[in-house]
Length: 398
Image (cartoon, helix red, strand yellow):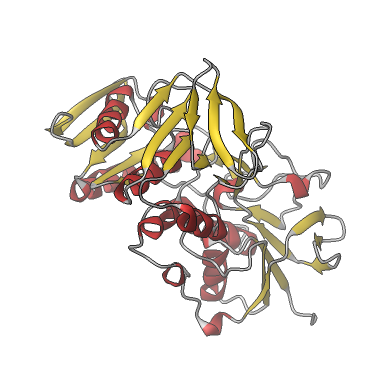
């Protein structure tokens, strides 16, 4: 490459693309190189479990538009395999190295696959990448029995898509309700009833101990001895940050790449930042708590913020309002804030019984989060209110 400044982005993702766009808007005129393990340019992941499976969207509609004047160097189908901070080099799967002046890590997460016998049989799926979705979509046919291991967001969204397509669906989870880690019990139960009314069968409090089949998976065996026939199995028990290639680099790895409040990686010499699902950052708006946020909005916002933090040492701390949403059947659930720390919940509009509601999440009478089911317009005022409060608190601590 030329002697121009080199900004390297590892991860051809939403966070990576938004970083490149922010750099050009900032006026950065150096080389920007984006390395992506997939062969695809950056694309929108949320539809993989929903509109893409049901046929409402096609694969070519997912790719994000990329302006030609961004002048990016693309390295697709290539993985990063190592990082040498002293030499400022990223090692690649091609056995070449790429020098950087500034480096953004946006490698996201990988699905967790349990170490079960026969887990590599045909018919067993994970869902993270576009190729995963293509294979799952090809395999699913009306009347087939899909067993989903994991009742998290991905599992429940795929269950809704599969039932729409006419598949029989069973969900297995060791918890006692769907989306248990993210939702209060009362809201989780609403979704349990929705799914059961749509024909989904649950096996709560159970784990998978075996998979059977020869040429293809045929059934799952549970810890209580029950055997459930399966034409297809989706494993959705969680994910882990894609940081294996950074081991031995000197960066601090703890459930992701540990960063400061500006998304700059600890031990990165001020030249390395991280963004998106892989980044653990100090959130000054929440008493300097460490956070890693695995949601679409954060990836877009943090990609830009992290890149600019490497350009300007006076950039502000990254203080997003955490948020997520999920679409299942005709229901859209949205959340903002940190409802997980709430000590009580109150319905302020609608009702759980009507499956249309607004719930405030309170801790010592302080509003810390909001849930809305099919009440999207009401969220805007809460978002503004909570963002203003967080900004005020951040200014007081600065």
